[in-house]
Image (cartoon, rainbow, N blue to C red; front, side):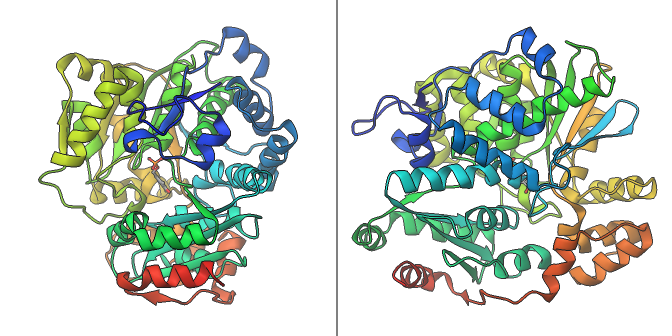
Length: 492
Ligand SMILES: *Cc1c(COP(=O)(O)O)cnc(C)c1O
């Protein structure tokens, strides 16, 4: 299958490209993204014949349906990385927490956030393509805390790839910071910057526009790629776990074949939700995808009012930092799928130039066929964490934003699967605030130990082990010094 561009085709870009090309070169014409030319359809037999496959077998089947140009052997190796998750025979456990309500635990990989689901195999595939093409790639990542560790872990010591990861000093949890600064790998560089996540991201953007920076890369024969969810290679791997959750419900006898379900997604850049959207389009019986946001509720407004408007908004720092986003990149792929390239280009141009766009009534109706939305503020999220912890189920603050969707948005009596995107251990101080109903400042270690004792749960060994590990990256610099730091690294 070929891949095409969301904003139409510009001179100098191929009209359609192979999967491997889109993976290595994720930016398309006019600043757009790559999408499959046609989303394939699963027939009824697919569900009947595949519901008891293991996660990696199912992933292989689904990726092959997209006819991607990745060698069988490489694909198998990449997907076998799921064997390193907590339980290889149940990579993404679907846990019943109440009648009709389930949690799809997507965080059982090495860095304890759902980013591993896509990034683990993605890193292997990308590095293999780089090596075979005899090219070197630099991956620049700005992180609010989960993308960084997952990107570093997957690319550590991989051939032909270098990674530079920027994080806001003081803007992540201790666990997230330690996951990054203790990460081994000669090809990795982690830099803290004075400022917030927006500063880290805008520093990256200005770097990508800097001609001296680009000339230096060229001199070193290094190309740029990206490992965030603008890369379709991430998205394709995020379709799988939604389909798998449906199969898990079938296998648990909770639903019958063909019965519809809700899927609820705590959303930021909309990659996870887009995976669910493609699964629905492929024919998975999903009634609606419920989009949960935090106080940065741009997506709620888009889905409820048909307007994307950030003119009056300032980013609010919340308990669910991975969802603190105003420009949500993957909405664009839904716009393209529904309204075509010309309209997408127009809408995205409005967003870039004027900080807003508005859908027509008809377009808004089409969006609401697949999505509904609600947002959840920190106070409500904390209540949810407390309520379920008291009943024996511990969830992180991102996952907690989903419960309001279950309470408010279901118009039919169908099962609801909430995507759980991180393990509680990554946000222990917030968790302890919720459980103790206080707003004291706890350190991560103190909070981890206190929760572990109070709730009688184990701290994941890879997390408790972080506190005794050697710090390998201790650079914290001003924005202005980033370019020099990165050039020093790639020249070393
Ligand atoms: C990245 C992330 C999200 C948001 O996912 P998107 O695909 O960007 O919408 C939600 N929760 C956690 C814990 C994350 O790390």
